[in-house]
Image (cartoon, rainbow, N blue to C red):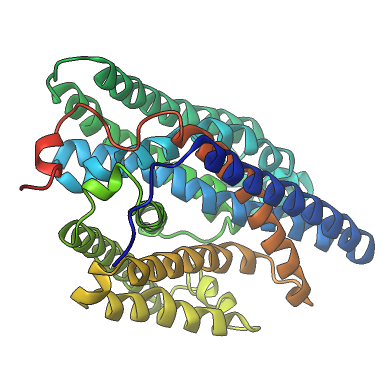
Amino acid sequence: MTTMLPPVSQAEWDRWQRSAAVAAVAGCATFACVGFFLYFLGGVNSWLQFFLSYLVAYNFWLEVALGSLVLLMLQYVTGGAWGFVIRRVLESGTRTLLLLAVLFVPILLGSHVLYLWAQPDAVAADESLQRKSPYLNVPFFVIRAVVYFAVWLALAYFLNRWSARWDAESRPGSPRRYRMLSAPGLALYGLTVTFASIDWVMSLEPDWYSTIYPVMFAVGQMLAAFAFVVAIVVLLATRRPLVDVISPGLLRDLGNLLLAFVMFWAYVSVSQFLLIWMANLREEIPWYLRRTRGGWQWLALLLVVAHFAVPFLLLLSRDVKEHRRRLLFVAGLVLIMRFLDLAWWIEPAYPLEGRYYFWLLDVAALVGLGGVWSWWFLRQLQQRPLLPTHGPFLAEAMPND
């Protein structure tokens, strides 16, 4: 039997934020030191790896933040007690998008290193890049990024502002305006994330394309965000006020939804593989060849086993879904696999020799950016009650006597 703990105190919030700050400083310092050391050893290839590692880590934390926005809008559109319980975590995740907009600046500064289409010499020597230059050029790339973040920040702003107003009101209101914003908001998300996935990741290999790739990108964001939210909720499940609403049934619902997202990710991933492999087009096949050779095949196998098979089998069990520690293990495993999946997507775009020691950069970038992001997230999470005091689905979320 688990002893119920009191609400999280300010001292605990401060301690957690200090730990995040320490991780941020240590990770960023290691990332910078290792990056510059490898640059002096390996020259331009190491500088390229520096930005590739940053891009992987950045996209991982963007997945959690942007996926939180999607899940928040989905919950307002579909309803359900599951979303009421995790709403504060989702809202706090969306409020990190402003930080991530600032952290996107290094990618802009490194665009001439990351992307062939941003290198004048490469464009001059490649007729295909010249045909795509009206779209793939640095000024338009920057403008599109500004538009993406403007849309995401606007959606997050209004949803958070209205939610705060709900808490301040003494009487409940209508949830209609949430649905009126969230329904078109999901459409805007689908549009912006499609072009963002093309701009930031797919264009690393400008001669390759896949129409299902943006769907994989979006599903990965939702999966990462939901796994993160499940982990946070489970960690706080014995604290008030969550202890009053977290029941085995609710944990089972969260586990079922996590299983659904894992299966959806597997479905779109296998669909892309089968469609590209059966078409056997020389423009598409090399993407998989680069990711199944030179050691990357072992990571591909690990993704099949640990990103799909293990979570799938574990989440079929009712006992796993209703047990906090077991569910936390599955959520943590999914998060680790999301980072490795992004690395598998991004880094083989530039096959570099001796890549094994570059994983130091990957881990340092993940920890450094993660520390900064976590510090900001914890700061947002403590600003409001962990459970909304008013709002739609409140009665449904409260357990019946």
